[in-house]
Image 1 (cartoon, helix red, strand yellow):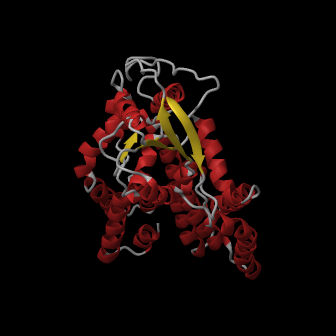
Image 2: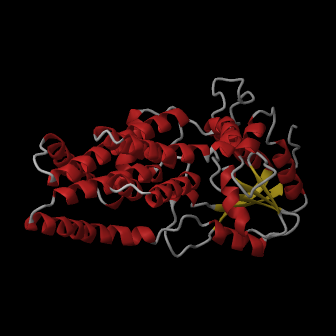
Image 3: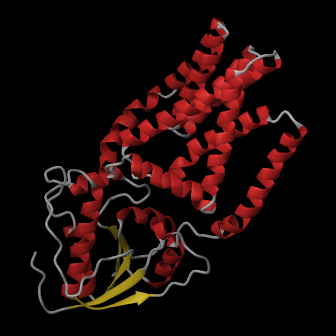
Length: 396
């Protein structure tokens, strides 16, 4: 934002090169930044067009075009990823987006969204005032700044909303940090431009300090929350497992965190079994979803371990039923009503493994692995051991 505004204020080759380089770095850091670069280019183009500075509009266009062209090598990757991502897509609508956005805004206190709303209202009111009333030369810069920031923020908001609707990702709070950052920067700049009195200039930092003082007690405990306990579980597994044991992780994507720290002798498997645990391989998961009996290799390994006196180590939540209930039958993904949605299949895989254990194992125990700090619920993984084999034969 700063580089684009400097280019609009006083164009030069150096500023054009800086804006272009920063935009290229931005889109290569995060694909969604392409939305921001597009919005800034359109906002900058609006300012240039308002002043009939067509060479400047062309320079702004160069920033966008060069940034877009730099992404061309990724087209094949993005196309392949769009095929894998359908396993994670959900029906996302305006209500879901606003609900998660509210959670993101309220992460540091339930009253914080009101602060955001109040400051945004003040910023927009000042910007509209600058656009409507422009009597003196001093207001020309404010008019252009307001036009640039308002249009860029509006386009970012619309573009990001469309991005979420098209990709259908089950968004979480951190997905909204990008548009929140744009709104924060734009709002602060607009309020700063309107703070032309001593009292207004004093009120702005005072408001920031008061808000920070209230947020601080909430933010400090949040900083102590672990993102995962996988490293602690892996350390315990490294010490306890033997070569005749097997470790089964559910859900499958948590094996990436476990595998980063696990170096033990037992085989590490997932539900369904994936050949690679270094990355979250949605392509491999999708292939397994299309199989008739994707869990059979895992169940065979579990049976072998239990029959030979080994231990099955369960990492994650397994839906044990009382009394035991067989898992519902789902057709291979893509052939049934669930389509390629991964969540229903993951639920069935967990139920199938739990039923297998309840029908065949002799005993199971929860393993207490204490953690000194609170752990984020997304990867607060429990650990359980399963041992012994009943005399009955599992009907393969």
